[in-house]
Image (cartoon, rainbow, N blue to C red; front, side):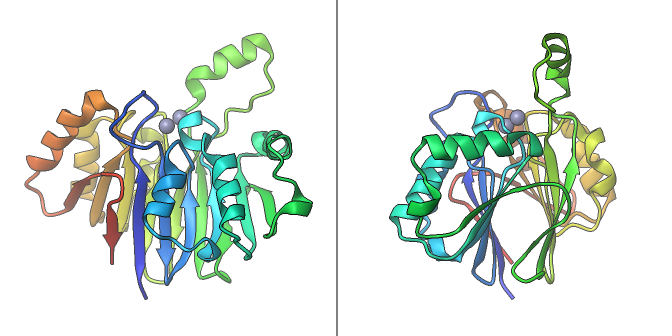
Length: 256
Ligand SMILES: [Zn+2]
Ligand SMILES: [Zn+2]
């Protein structure tokens, strides 16, 4: 059994030339699932030599552009690479019809696709690879800050953002995506082989305390704004506890 996580993009939403935007490939015995699809993810996917026919699903945590902006290009790239195996694209409910229309408007027409693309809603446990991998979406409050505006102006947005518990046959992972604060997810941070935690909206002292007091073997700090790079590096370098802390870089492969 081999589980790996490959970081395709470790930037946050702030503009940067140093990193791609969010994208993470989970590989379990060579079946692949992509979490988020921000700018630069398509090229990093190709650079890592992944086989498009091994990719079973794309899961989008929320619709901020740093998590979605490569989506049509990625889907087109799989088409041009002649992918044949089916692909399930999981989105927040609020985005399903919009993305279907966007793909249509981008000429990614169902009748011309060499593979079957299903656009599904994140509304329960996502089961991949005949049930061997289970992904549990955890709604979080990342988009709460915009909620007042949405209410005031009557926008249709429903402010849906998810973190994910990921269960493979022998590993347990957690991908925070963007969160409001650690309060959104801390009850789930237990018994983890790998925690992939965003760095833009967390308190570092609090996360280190959580890591130290719970069974979290390895933590990757990602979603890194340029302005926080030095701080994160210092947190990682000065850590003297017994757990493993890593600062994300694009192209990094975490292997078990
Ligand atoms: Zn983000
Ligand atoms: Zn966001």
